[in-house]
Image (cartoon, rainbow, N blue to C red):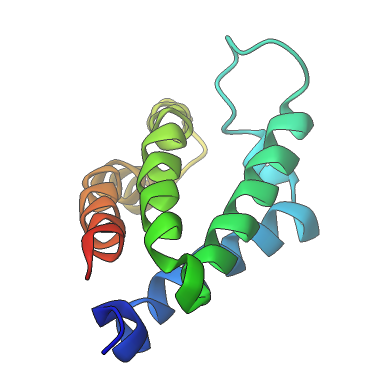
Length: 129
């Protein structure tokens, strides 16, 4: 028999779909992604937006394909860790923005711990035999 992830592609599909969808959005509507790039990074935010979009498309594709799913899982875990500072930046910006409604402020803060299940799922794919 082949790897668990190959026999049960349903475990990988949601994560692949999430990554592929977000990757596409980085190119279709880049401005919201530009706004969460940490200001301390050198260069233009759009460059980081496009680079992270390419990374999400590549990792999502790797997870979608059985032959590269384990590698895709490792890469997804690293990607979720790498983009976490942008999520923190977004939460900080929104919490400090008097124009943002309170439910959105709360939502951006509460979504930060949601990175943990994404990382866990990615690691499960990476470790599956």
